[in-house]
Amino acid sequence: MCTRRMVMVKEEMRRGPWTEQEDLQLAWFAALFGERRWDFIAQVSGLNRTGKSCRMRWVNYLHPSLKRGRMTPQEECLILELHSRWGNRWSRIARRLPGRTDNEIKNYWRTHTRKKAQEQKRSCSPSRTTTSPADDFPIGSEPRAEAAAGCHLSSSCMSLGLDEDSHGADWCSMDQAWNEMGMPEAIDGRSFGDCKASNAWPLSMPSPPVWECCSSAPLWKPDEEEELNSAAFGL
DNA sequence: AAATTGTTCAACCGCACTGGT
DNA sequence: CACCAGTGCGGTTGAACAATT
Image 1 (cartoon, rainbow, N blue to C red):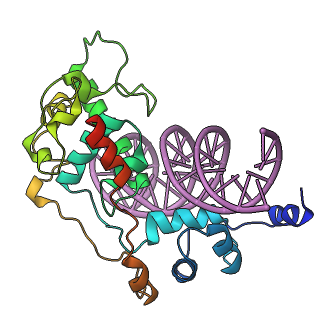
Image 2 (tube, rainbow, N blue to C red; image 1 turned 180 degrees about the horizontal axis):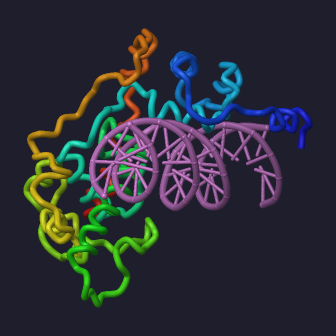
């Protein structure tokens, strides 16, 4: 174990919310050195953050191709479908939702499943006799409400490029899943047509010219290998 | 208007994986 | 082959904000 590293570890790293200045610095250095060498960027940028922290900030917040704003109904639908297929493989799901991060999707899922589970619980109470209440299970091991419903694929989701054949016997329709969970046509009080994704840059900061060069290389590329596997194995 | 409760989401943590030496 | 550093992923936390009482 080299002493140089020991010294670095001892050094107090900054934590907590990022400032606008830090964001600008990080964006600049990420554009300069690429989106992989995070430890190096953390060092040379003088941010006094860990490489891990820098990566997280970039991927989840600063990346130019990120969408901001609420999930569209299509995205919500897609998340539910993909989750029923892949479970808590958030990064994998995120690859199918350009502009959305695994963190965002994870948060969305957590929030909404909990909410729906609570609604369901309420509607099932007081004489509910079933075991394993939906809001009791730990995230990641929750029973698939959608799978339990056992049904077909909704047409709205078909238009998102999901092939019905690929789902196997336990696949089900998200329409029905929503119904099962007490889901009306609108999500959270919004009608489907009502929901707009905002692409506006969230910070009151200038868009650095360096982003032009990196925005041409989107973070979310079609996962070619996955596509191949999907084709080969019907996934 | 203040207090309480619920919701959202940025950020951190720990572990697993990968590539370099 | 073993070790190490860097990176990526999924789970979790907690602060800020919104809604409700």
